[in-house]
Amino acid sequence: MIPLSVPFLNGNEWKYVKDCLDTGWISSAGSYVNQFEQQVADYAGAKYGIACMNGTVGLHIAQILSGVTANDHVIAPNITFIATLNAIKYTGASPILIDVDPKNWQMDLDLLDAYLRDNTIEKEVDDILYSFHKSTNKRIKAIMPVHVLGNIGDMDRLQDIASSFHLDILEDSTEALGTLYKGKHAGSFGKFGVFSFNGNKIISTGGGGVIVTNNEALAKKAKHLTTQAKTSSMEYLHDEIGYNYRLVNVLAAVGVAQMEEFPTLLENKRKMDRFYRAELTGIGDIEFQSVSSDVDANCWLFTFKTKYMRDLLEYLNENGVQSRPFWVPMNQLDMFKNEIYVSNENHSDKVYNSAISIPSSAGITTTEMETVVKTIKEFYKAL
Ligand SMILES: *Cc1c(COP(=O)(O)O)cnc(C)c1O
Image 1: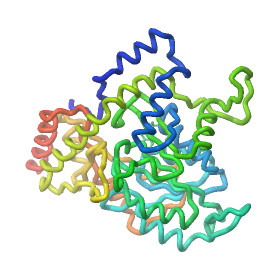
Image 2: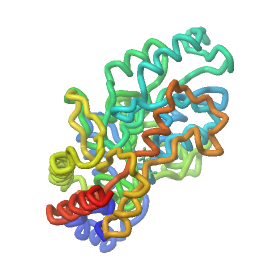
Image 3: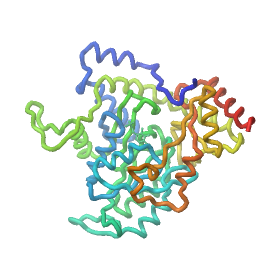
Image 4: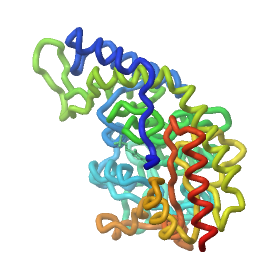
């Protein structure tokens, strides 16, 4: 079976993990944590990095530090991995789900802009301006763009909308390490960006995440909150309800080694993307995700649309090519079906019913990609 996406661990991972075991620094203190945080922040063009257990908890911390409360709304795309929405719900806030652009599969910004114009009023609270939803009377505190599949939308436009409506940008850049918009890194456009190092991501620590920000005070608070909000190095004094969200040194050691390999792995992903696009153009009714000329994507997971998605999925998985459908749109899940869903044509559903992801490991070989392409071509020939 050619796997969908597996980690590539051929660098110094073993050496650094062994160092942790040999020295006993396996837990929450240790030099790899700081090193990993700094590497990721430097790479993403941010000043500060805060390591945490996974991307989901990183997104939770970003919500808390943006001041999101149970009386607020947070805007998110209707097509994302569940973690984005879970992070909003952990604060008690209510998501506003925005349909996606049928071409790039990111949040539809025309729709978002029109919706906010028609449905919000500006109000001042304690000398600060906010947008309130006209019918729910809730404040809309933040927006979470998700850089779906490592692609990225029009960030200039998104920043304009966010500033017009006083929204904090909390980037779910979990899939987008290495992605550039007009030469600027995904994760560096908002108050916070969050990266994930889960097993299927472009690089991995098994499980892990890094929150990035340019704001020193917020960075300190993020570190504080993820480490039980302890105020003294000696006494067990804590000044608020904190979280045990830290990343342990053994996993950070894997991360340091993975970051060393990252430029090579990113180049492999981009090569893979070029190969698949060249080989699959004109095959059956295959339609690719469109990537703007402003964007240099990290090409995380190769996904295309076809109306034969269900049959192709079955065919590929039966013939040694591991493939997966796309995420069920958030508005179709029981927990979120009563949330506000902004849509004209429900493109989310159409993307969901036609998108399929094919093997995209950073270490995928040309022979493997040739097999994937050959199997896809066989499927369409037999139609
Ligand atoms: C992977 C992912 C996350 C969560 O990351 P974990 O590290 O698995 O918790 C959040 N959002 C999106 C869009 C993701 O793909």
